[in-house]
Length: 247
Figure 1: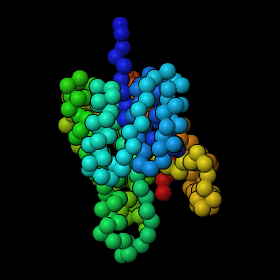
Figure 2: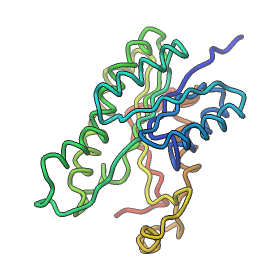
Figure 3: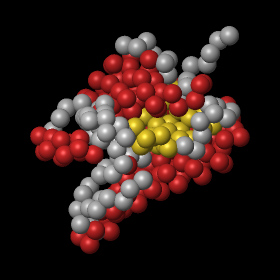
Figure 4: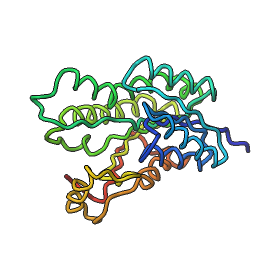
């Protein structure tokens, strides 16, 4: 039996977790739409890695915090591949600062990228998934969707909203062969460690029973499972990839 070639769109795919997800799905035969906001060379490099897996890749640059860019990204993906079967909402911004000092613009920026982008892209791509009676949406929530963090109120609110969206869409579209799940990474070591974040990451180790940071590949492995045929009965769930961390 011939298996249809499927396409996955991953936002924020130029590095770290997004890149790892793109490569994991490419290894499973998915055509990949690599999205990034600014760093086209990084996205092009990921696309080349994807093509080395023997599948097609498209770089669709755009700021998912802008409605017009979301529409353009979805349009470009559909024009290139005809279908988008998997949507991974990975792009996020995580500014930190006192709640009383955050401006309206600060809040709008976080909501636009961390929550509204998933809404817009889901609305753009769900009709095709419904028509084919197969689809996967995976939302990367992070631990902000479980715990409220001082200094990151906007991110916590947006990620809680993304978890709510996940549960609602899972119930509404499950009958159409579509699953919607969330993956919540804990502290993950980036592709390239930044000196400014090194001290913070070392402090996080004391709260992780596994005694180490996770890797982008470990998060990607869970997304890979959810996007597979074998993941078809996992729906409306949040899977934590955090080494047992609770705070």
